Amino acid sequence: IDINHGRRDHQDHDGGLRASWAKELIGHALRERVENIDHDYCEAGEEDTFFVADLGEVYRQHLRWKLNLPRVKPFYAVKCNPDTKLLQMLSALGTGFDCASKNEVEQVLNLGVEPSRIIYAQPCKTNSYVRYVASQGVRQMTFDNADELRKIARLYPEAELFLRILTDDSSSLCRLSLKFGASLDSTDSLLALARDLGLNVVGVSFHVGSGASDPRAFLKAVQDARVVFHQAAAHGFALKTLDVGGGFCSDNTFEQMAGVLRAALDDYFPAHSGINLIAEPGRYYASSAFTLACNVIARRTMEDELASSYMVYVNDGLYGNFSSIMFDHQHPVAKILRSGGRTLYDTPAAESTDDGIEYSIWGPTCDGIDRITESIRFPQLLDVGDWLYFEDMGAYTKCSATTFNGFPNTHDVIYVCSEPGAEALLDLH
Ligand code: PLP
Image (cartoon, rainbow, N blue to C red; front, side, top):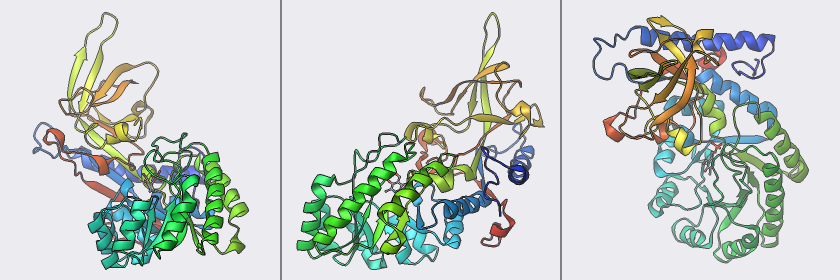
């Protein structure tokens, strides 16, 4: 199987063919849905925004992971996108899961996943959730402070604990170390306290920040983790696992990140050390698998002496699946799916140009911040009833969508699978 398939940045001849197959499948699903909707007559909600999810892309991302980080077992971060079919695909591929709440743990257990394949990777946990995971036999969890250790000693002394350490996350889109992670100044005393409380520390974890861009953050974090392994040994803990967290992107920065991390792991935690290596990737698996389609519900013409421009309003926005603009610092790019009764998906006319007609794209709520795109140009004249689509909409999108203004935050997902081999892992229909 060619893992370059479907990726837009480097495709060899075979990859190019496979990419067009994935595009064709997604295009077919988008087309079939929107061509049947007549916005002049349809019921309220029939023209709602919807996703097409290509689970073949998830499969390819998994193979790409195994190729680049063969020693590191991924525990998918459910928070990124808890779509059930996505979780089922990952479960079938044998990944573990990083959960941060009772509901996430419950959702994963309900898929039939063994508790040993779950890590409760939230250093500051709710008491009742700790009791819940204890009752379900989910033992692995993280901590980064003394109060949390005392909580765990009271509620779940048998837990298998990972000490989460601070990282330099300054190159990332979403910084996490402002909130979590023990500094190297404090790790020794935390380990001493864990020893005094009779707790079971089994590993070290870190997170270099979501959407990280500087691979040196991984190198430094691995070096720091090595120091903590030595400190733990001095306190009588024989740590057995290093958790390198998330932060990986699905674009072509992945190979570089993974290369630096792989080399660091080989230097500081070589295979013969017998240390298990795990990670908590979210964005890496979910982002490129989901495409979102939105309907143009209104248009405002902005007259100008030279040329008219338009404000178009679509039925999804910052309070909905474009929450990633606010929370995840993303810049989703619109393409035309259907305009003037013609489907343009995957044609040059669907792409933005330097000239053409200028648009700004707005969400459906009454709030002025609900703007998706400040300026984009298309050769086509967009009007009410036309459709736009946005690629790479799988990460931190629908999971943080609200129902503000009464707009729904649950939308249909049409599943396709561009890897025939992977289809057998799931019942897609
Ligand atoms: N692990 C933890 C503890 C996180 O907080 C997050 C994201 O916030 C992730 C994993 C997933 O990160 P990413 O989507 O960047 O891979």
